[in-house]
Image 1 (spheres, rainbow, N blue to C red):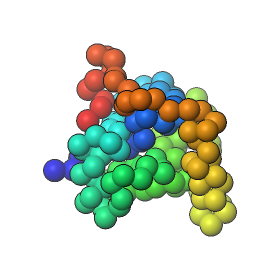
Image 2: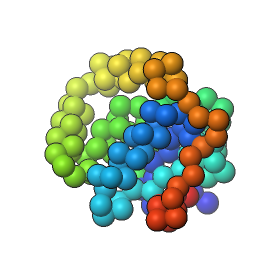
Image 3: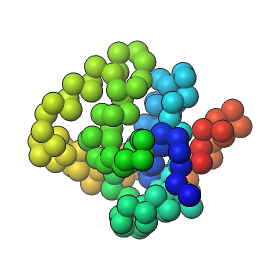
Image 4: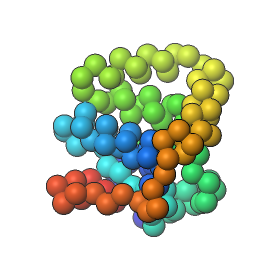
Length: 133
């Protein structure tokens, strides 16, 4: 069964991705988002259910109201819900995806080189455990 909550799926060994998850947690005081790594059992179920590769983790995904968003659209839909003025970035959704996604893909291709990666997925603190699937 796929998650019924709004869920951010991320590359669990990517330092940039883990930093983004921490950023979202810190700017989501109402706990709107839940999280799971793409490598996890739930992440793999979501990928399979949507016909996506289960071994290539090139994008953050957002599962919201049963619909799966990826790349820049996922990132913008996530920041739309954050406090601290970050929701203003949602205006970039007006920029066509054929312009937004190449920039997203460039960062994605270079994220391990620029930010590094971990040996294993991060483990949430006991306080945050309820927000991870």
